[in-house]
Image (cartoon, rainbow, N blue to C red):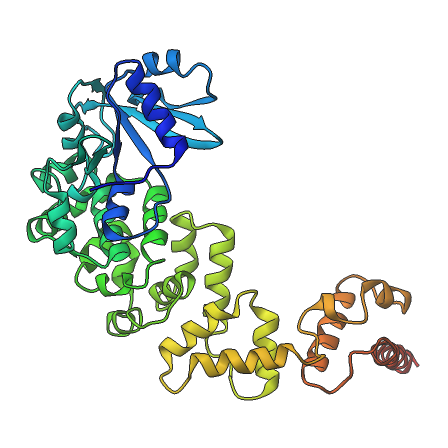
Length: 404
């Protein structure tokens, strides 16, 4: 195996070797290269300690990313590269972090502490591929397999259970039998994992096209991660979440769609306000008619990313066609019909000059926008002004008659 390394990586490797230390590329870069995928990040591992690296990288910008765990980030030609000292982890008492780490002089010992065989591959420019745990074989067999005894790996760090699912979904791999059995056996340890980390793994997992197929066979594990999922309508969700195409947000909306208290679940598991808003808007308008042009304009006005909404609706309704709907909305967007208040040729200042105040202004603007989308009024300033003036005059006349 030969890997054409960028100059900024070669520079760091030569720096380590020139000072008498080993330097290996490790992890995802080698995995992706063997699979023919683009390489996004390069990580190095070495027998140099962080203190030693700080000395001979003193002319490079450095970030002490995790010095206590042996990791130093070095900026090489503007690229941040994590370099980690070979290490052996101590005991894990919280099922997530080792109590201590001990630096090692053995590359094999360092690889043995990692999670899966496909993530423990190393590369040296002279030696080529270094594969202590048959990671290349597992890549060829398309398997996610723990290094060593799977139960021990999950006992050490329970988050690896969700990471196994994420890698399987990302790569469209199967999970090796003993690894899968250990995942189920140790699933209750997910209670020790912070909700922030569970959220991070879940949203990454459901960003991949094949993620939906893992929900049903590993459902007990998902429940251990997010207990409220036990209340979903399985016969509905299991089926629709496997459909393609779907986006990350549309999958997440489908996952939580049958929960009555989905808002509190999303909030509890630290979904961002933006993620919650996107998911909730889809669920709030999941029964919106999709027949008339007015319906299309409403969709355009409600969703910043209409694709997420359309994918959700198509997954639930077989009679709908995604490409046709997208083409229809594209045609509507080309028409001179406003679908947002910013496109309206009448604004709050105009309303204020006519005597509208406070909440009246917001109601008026939304009414004008809706009338434009219904094509009952043209989006011209004088037309909108005339409507607003007539409405105000009528309101004044009505009040006057009441007081007579």
